Image 1 (tube, rainbow, N blue to C red):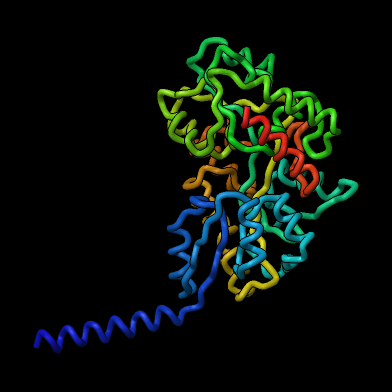
Image 2 (cartoon, rainbow, N blue to C red):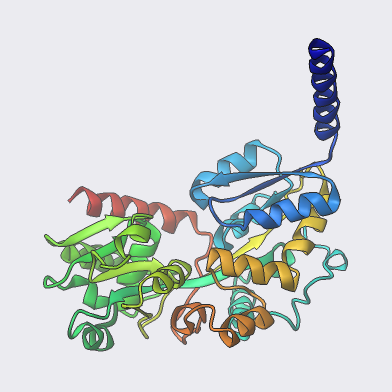
Length: 353
C-alpha cells in the first residue's frame, strides 16, 4: 500500500510539473529588488502564467545582455532606453493595449515636464514612444539632522558641502552621478559639458577626496540607519524615502544648482517571445492598485499623480523625499558614447587617487 501510494504521489507530482512547465512564461529583465514580488504572484494567479524576474546591477551591464538574449519586458533607465532605440532593439509602444493608465492625464506634472524637455530638445527623444514609466526620481543629499549646522551648510553651499573636511561624506560610487554633481555645482551642463568644464569637474572631485570621504553603493541602506554613519550621503530619492522612513533624524536636500532627474520605464524588445503577454503584464503593473502597492513596498516615486496623492494623503512616506520637485537647472542623462567614455576615464583617475 505504501509503495502504491508513493507511486501515485510521484505520478501526480509529475503531472503537476508537466502542467506547470506548459504554462506561458514571461521573462522580465529589471534591476534587483525593484518590484513587489507579491504582485508577481498575483499576476501569475490571475493569468495562469509563470513570470521569471531576471535582475541586473546597472544599465551598463544590462545592455550587452539585452543584445544577446530575448526578454519579454525590460525596465531600463531613460538614457539606456535611448541607446536601445538607437540600436533598433525596441518596439514602439502600442497605447491601444495600455488601458490602465492614460499617459496624457495620469502622469505627475513634473514627470510630464521632464518628458517634454527630452522631446523638445534639438536632438529630441520621445521616451513615451518606446517606454511606459515605472518609477522616477532624482539624486540628492541625505543628511543627519542631528549634526548641528549641517542644514545651513547645505542651504549655502549646495553640492559644494560634499567637499567639507569637517564631515563624514559618502559619494555614490558612480562615475555618471559623481560627475553630474561636480558639473552642476559649477553651473555646467551634465549632458553637454565642454572639455574645460569636464576637466574642472575632475579637479572638483579630486579636491573632494579627504580622510572622511567614502565611495560606496548599496551600503548606504545600512549605513544611514539610526545612528547614521555619515553626515551626508549622495543617494537616489527612492533610497532616501526608505531611509527617512526608518530613521526620523534624516533629511533630504536637492541643491538648486540642479540634479539628475531619471525615469525608469517598461519597454518591449523587438525579439520578445510573447508581446501580447508583455503588454498584459505592463498594463497590470501600471494599474492604480498595483502601482500603489508597488510604491509602498519599493519606496520609489510612482509616475501616477493619483498614487502620489494617495501616498501623501495617508502619510505613508515623507513628502520631502517622495515628491520629486523638478528645478529649472535639472537635467536628464542622454545617450552619448563619447561623453560616457570621457567621464569613465576621468573617474578612473579620480578613484585611483
